[in-house]
Length: 118
Ligand code: FES
Image (cartoon, rainbow, N blue to C red; front, side, top):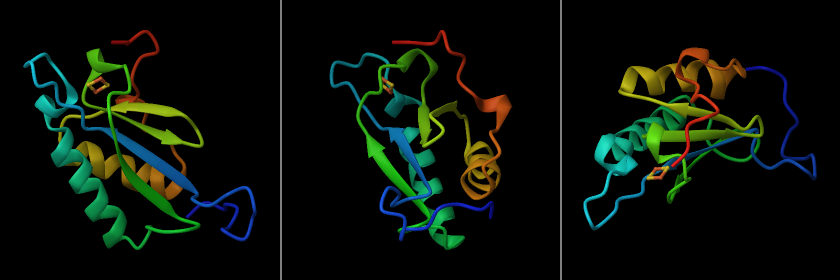
């Protein structure tokens, strides 16, 4: 893994934090939940746990509600870099885990264009 500040650093608890929009609209309007968001989230959690990246000083994978970038859904965002991704399948999630969450390398092909909003 790339060097990072540890949990002993009072300003850092997780090296990276990824949030997945899992929003589902009950009225049937389009939302990330209709585009495989739950499967992407679950696969990311499994991979991060399997790679022993989870926990303080490592990576945290969290559910989120609507992140207001629905037109690019399903979406996820990685902090502290603030990089937004869209993904299609488990291979995309694997690439985000292996490249960005483990090594800090942005997966350019999956980056959500800045003009994509709700
Ligand atoms: S429904 Fe996922 S960003 Fe809005």
